[in-house]
Image 1 (spheres, rainbow over the protein chains, first blue to last red):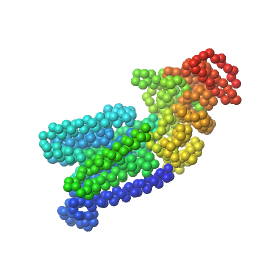
Image 2: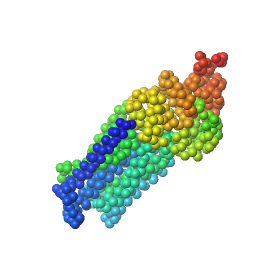
Image 3: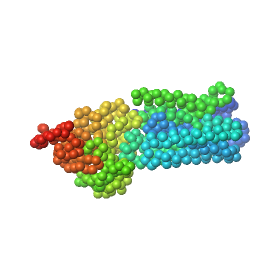
Image 4: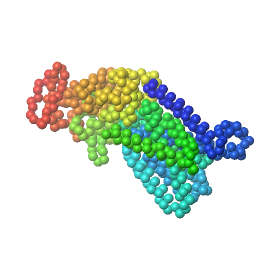
Length: 334
Length: 262
């Protein structure tokens, strides 16, 4: 245990350093050659200066979103893997991401996003919360982890089908184009107002998830023995599912679907925390932030005519990783 | 001293009755065995006592309805160990045993650490404490699981087949360990399938048949051929050699004369 807590502290320190470094790099990179030092030297009187606008309107929201969305995805991934006791689980599995996307697409589709841009985050949170409530009613009060997964897959599939339906019947090709690009997932071109709306919801989600460390450790023993250690599993489940809905739902509503972060990060960090679900939570939050910030820096550095979407790059890394995990698990079963 | 009183306990799964009006008492400082054919309701009874499944009837802890005990207090008082399974994540033995301290939230405090070390030592796991639980043999894992539940310092221990799948040496090790803890004041209520180990190590025995108590009492009186024929459809002999009681089951049922005890 002493060795583990030493490794844990070391892991957290390294991850915090990486997050800080990538955050500063994210602020310093863009089409213009401005660096963090140029922003630093600006005075209070220069609020209409282009440099000021680039910093506050473009780069700061992007860096904050990279940080917070990464934290949400990494943390939710670790929490869900702990709860479902399945290393292949990730936030999308309980249908939260797709439902958040669906509700946001409805706002796009109805044209309300043009007049009321702030409706989008609310729609995402509403979508995520609806998914959770449907999941709760589908799975029942004392559902097993498997039932929760199956219910989540059903919700995810249905939400995906409704998004396809919306795209299919879209009369306006520009709206279709906008929706498709939004669904690809990105932290670029978002404002501080959007960050301000989503952040409190994400923060509540983080608190709920981080608070579930001890029950997640107990669940290592299985549901019955976890309950015998004094945890009310229905309460634990509600805490985890609502925490995931708030963190991932609000993040998805701003950025679109950024997949696989919640799968890859906990898997990579698990050996550094002695496989302990509680320690994995905070490590994965920092790891998720580091990964999303890195991926977002990478899309800016890649020499393509049009900037690659963040969701595309995480999928390109995550999908082969997912396949490798499946092969590894198949081998261990065989 | 009566620790637990079970009164008219019934459990249904769907419309199928699993336990029917089960009534008995558990006395402190004893090893009480629970036996019966597969599907007779043994595991269900243990789960109901641990409040892991819904039931009707009354379970009282030292005369008070157990439901009135707060969840955390109950977890500190009653330790439950289900049938053997590997933990979901490959923790080190020390981290695994430390899960037993979760209700006390003192895994990283001095008091908790001392109890943890004691449990690891008592279960002979000191040399294995940094090893991953997935790297343990069946016997070592069984000891680690017992250490985990002992680390919670419960008053009553509910164990569902704690020695299933173990070789004779490891079976004896576990049973001796439990006997030692009982001599320190612990009460153990455990499901067993081995008639001879039950004869040797349990003070009292409950035989279940189709969700009802067939017979309950001191082990030596319960383990007679009539009861065992009724519970398991086997013939058997209760013998004692060098002061060690054991039961020899035979199959198919044939007429055997009951030998003289002693």
